[in-house]
Length: 248
Image (tube, rainbow, N blue to C red; front, top):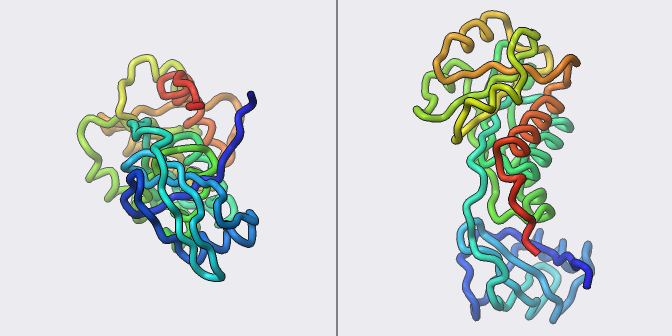
């Protein structure tokens, strides 16, 4: 018997078997007009805290929808504690970055304003919407935390003790990522720079910090979003949660 995907929705409300839940206008439109679902159809809901529950549409109208909550489908479980620190890039590529970082299991996304960052404003609501959609599609049980942008020096001054920061160093002088991971232990964070690269002064300052581990990502120059996703994928494969099976 093949795997049959089900529509998944992220909600803020608490979840429990036998409860009911009202959806907002956007989710109602998605179910009714985009996915063509009606009363009695099955969906699944999760909130990042209580696991995932089966549900059925009990009532749906033009702008409102009610769900009857059934049995728990999956228990809440811990996911990878892996942060992504990134210099904001242009909107379309930033949307792509957040979507794919969510699929790859990043637990927190931290925008850092560097000397060469050419994006003045970060729309956090837009980024969160992209992350929610990616979590729904990828069967995550959580939504990554999205932090407000910080200047790079402020972010580094407040860096938490005990978390190594893997710096993707485009200078070509750092050891390969795979070699560095052999000596690092979770929790980890990975950092990538802006489209023009880090300033030399930024790289010099970060290399001198005890919690920073500079690494190389191979012989080619990668775009900012490509570098971030390549690093996340390598970390998940070599030291993260890619050894766990996907729930069925």
